[in-house]
Length: 114
Image (cartoon, helix red, strand yellow):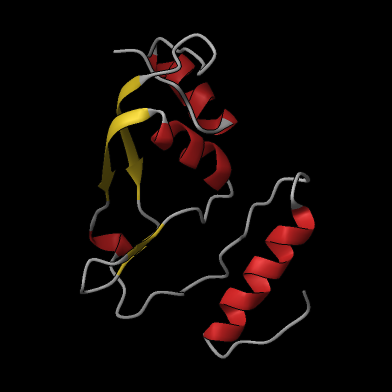
């Protein structure tokens, strides 16, 4: 087993536990991503990305043949949205991302600064 961590915190924990690490530069194709959900509702719809490493998580997941999302009962909620969900953006395409997020929010009847 070789891990490609999606956060510095995960990398530190892996080093502490002796899990061998790689990068996507060294190992660009992965067999499996295992990641945790932040919230899961009764219909098993889930939220990820509450920890702020969403971009890295998505890149690693895209490089993987399979993905498993795990959670325990502490992640179960009646309705998603227990906490503010960060939106991680890259400077490249920032304005296009702002427009897309604004349109998605408006389609849900939400308003706010863009």
